[in-house]
Amino acid sequence: MTTLIDPTLVLFADLSVQVGEPLEIGSTAHGLRRLIPIIGGEARGQGWRARVLPGGTDFQRIVHAGLTELDARYVLETDGGELIYVQNRALRSGPPELMAALQRGEAVDPTQIYFRCNPRFETAASSLRWINERVFVGTGARLPEQVVMRFFELG
Image 1: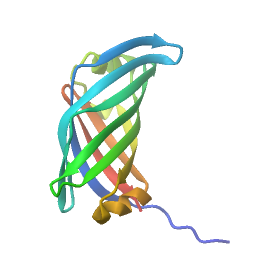
Image 2: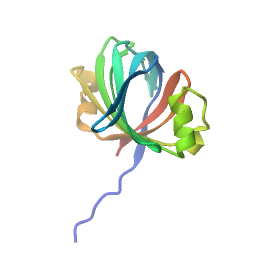
Image 3: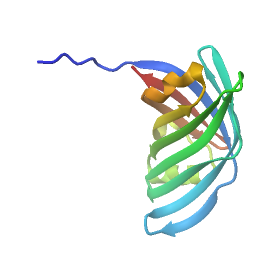
């Protein structure tokens, strides 16, 4: 029998992402579509910092009253000037009344909402190239004017 290695979690970064007013597309054949502009923020890892560049978007699909699928795409710029493209897919679920409060931009106790993500990174920076070849997972919380997340490398 082959010996498999159990994965471990290694802290990669904490992020705080500022978001703008949602643009609601409406109910489509695939669910309610919303686009949330990403207007700034910051990331802090072990020995590095970056800012979240404005211009990204969180593409959301509200599947039903208790489940939202997220697909956020944005760019980080490190203090050293390296650029990192981020695509972060996530699931956010919870009781319908709390999910509705989040949609209205209200504060909700993050412990009452399941928010897990799978960020992927792309960079041309030679010092960070290793992140192109790793799997990451994370957890998050939606606050009224920002999203906070913690990303882990799956070791």
